[in-house]
Image: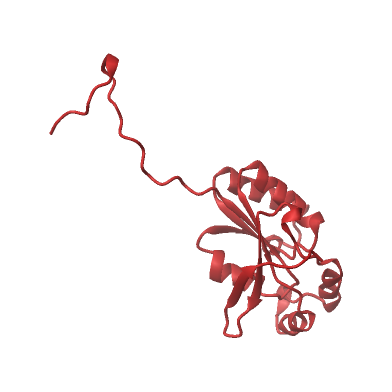
Length: 179
């Protein structure tokens, strides 16, 4: 075996690094009504690659859930991990801090938009049990605040997510004006 060629001064010349550059992390912000399919979508499409952060996983008695959520998101992104935020995230008030966190860590920022189907959400919510069931007034209040995210909100990509009728989802780039 021949030794590697030597550079001036005796240092070895290293071959160029051809290993793939790791992709930057992503923050996936799920936006939609309660019982819109966000958690099922996470399990089917993001669970293998994204750490889950959801206020629903915090104890009911937990104080300042927003601060706690942001600490978890920041820690994941700082470690180079992708993260999915599975809450309703109905408006810029909720998603602006997430977008800013993603930007500060050089992460791709994607909104997964679940267009509102109030009747369907209420139907699915009605069969939930215990803590999973949201009072109908809560679903309706979220519908009033719900706004379609767009690249103008700081997202790199907005993906529209709809049920496919067979237990899965159809994904497509979101089109149309925000609203």
